[in-house]
Structure formats: structure tokens, C-alpha cells
Amino acid sequence: MNSTDSLLSLIKIFRKWFKSILILCSIAVIAAVIISLTLDNYYKSTTIFYAASSDLAKPAPIGGFEINIDYYGRDEDIDRLLSIANSGELANTLIEEFNLAEHYEIKTETAKGKFKVNEHFRKLFSAQKNKFDAIEISVEDKDPELSRKIANRARDVINEIAQRTIKRSQSLQIEKFKSNITRKTIDLDSLTRKIEREKSKYGIFDTEYQGQALTEALASATNKSQIAAIEKQIQDFTKGVSRVVVLEQEQREFGLQLSLDKERYKQLLSAKQSDYNAIHLIESAETPLVKSRPKRSILVLSVALISLFFSLLVAVVVEKYKSVNWNEVK
Image 1 (spheres, helix red, strand yellow):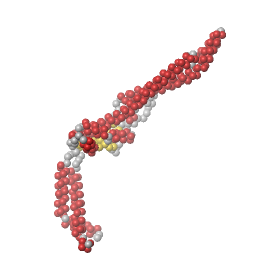
Image 2 (cartoon, one colour):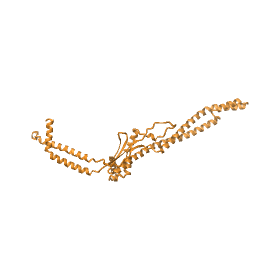
Image 3 (tube, one colour):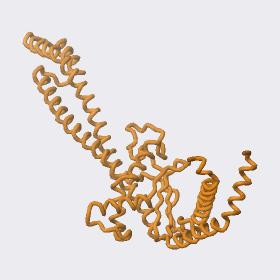
Image 4 (spheres, one colour):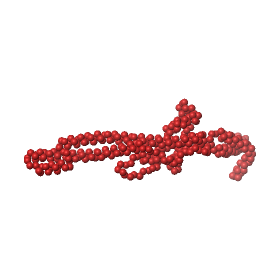
């Protein structure tokens, strides 16, 4: 049988079963219309923002050097915000603040009830990166005003959690620098006392000019006792000056490093106390005026097409079944 004969046979079957197919499709469409009318309207509200670079939370480098700062976040900054957006902390915060268990009419006396509330919320909540690398937070709800409030609050909570994460890292750095400063201060004091002991031991008060002064004093000495005393001072000075010079150089380097650590510590404290936004807001969520779902016309049309397809399929199967000579088959 060629394609034309097959098409003609299908048309014949359709004409023969036309009334039955019409009745079945009509029943399906009427049922779809009734069901779609009973479905609640949901409204979607969306807020859009970019991730801010974590560089904005870092203090400027010491010494006045200029650095290139990225104001917009890189992939890792975007991924961090998306992880926060899909975290249990955000979901639990929003569920508690907006009393969504009562709003969704779900009892939370049991662990299963709490799970259902969380699951229902996640079905209505969406956080994703769009094609422009911005983050979109969307919330659906039967109440359009509530969807707006939840979306904007979700954005703010994401910002708060991201700020807290950055400031926690800053606190760890601050404690580290504070500990280093305390230890280095103790070491510097110990080094200073050691230098004082060495100077006292060898009679050194000035490593730069004392040698020259002793040489001039020796040249101008007139009696043996003065000469002997000055030679003894020169001998002691020569023996200890190299040790004192090395210790003083170490003291200067140690003091310089301690000063840099103290300056860095102050900058970290200032950075922690300053305002830092983890996001760049592009668009706040607005109260939606048009429902996002259900698409009743699409639902009814889909049901009509599906019922038509299956009705035709059943008609073809029945006709083919009738055309089979079962006696010959047996």
C-alpha cells in the first residue's frame, strides 16, 4: 500500500469516527476549561543585579600604589552569590520572615511539614544567571504584592550573607595581623634590650661616630694612663661594634615590618567598618500586573490536540483490529 492509499484510509477512518472523535475531544476540552478555571493565578516578580567584585572590600595597598580594581564581579563572585541564593539559609530566612507556612496553608508541626514548605517555596523561587551575566531572582505567588516583597527581600538577604562572609574573612585577617603585631612587638622589645646590653658591655653609645671620636682622643692624649684607657675603649669598641651594627640593622628592619603590619591592620579595620555592597542593583522587583501562569488557552489547546491524536489512534487501532481475519490467524 502506497502513501496515498494510507492517507485515504486514514481520512475514511476519520470520517467514520468523526462524531465519536468530536464528542471525545469536546469532553476533553470542556474538562480542560473547567480545570483551568479552577487553577489559581500566579504572579512573577523579578529583580536583577550584578555581582560586585570582592576587590572592593579590600584595603588599598600600602605606599600609595595604584591598582586596577574590577568593580563588577568575576565568575567566582557570581557563583558565590548564586550559591547563597540557592542555600537553605536564604530559604529559611524568607519562609520565617514572611510566615510562608501559613500563607501556603501547610502545617509545620512535623519535620515532613517543614520539608513541604521548603519544597513548595523552591518551586516558586528561581535564581539564575542571564545571558548578560546578571543574576535574576524571580518569585511567583498568588499575591502579586507578596511576590514583589519576597523577591526584593531575597536580594537584600543575599547581599547581607555575602557581606557577612567577606567580613568574616576580614575578621580572620585582622586577628592574624593583631597576633603578629603583638608577637613582633615583644620580639622588638627583646631585641632592643639586647642591643642595650651589648652597648653597655662594650661601652658603645654611637656606632657611627664613636670610633672616630676615640681615634681623635687617642691622638690628643698626653700621658700613659689616658692613652691606656683610650686604647682599652678602642679595643672594646672594636670587639663589639660589629655585633651592635648587625643588631641595630635587624632592629630597623624589624621596626619597619612592624610599622607596615600596624598600617595594614588599621586599613583592614577601616575596610571592615566601611560599607561594602556585594551587588550592583540593576532593577528592583515591581508588583506584577499580569499573571505568569496558568496559560489557560495553551492548556486547553494542548488538551484538544492530545485528545484528537489519541482519538485518531484509537480509531485506527479499532479499524485495523476489525479488518483482521482472526480465523485465518488462528
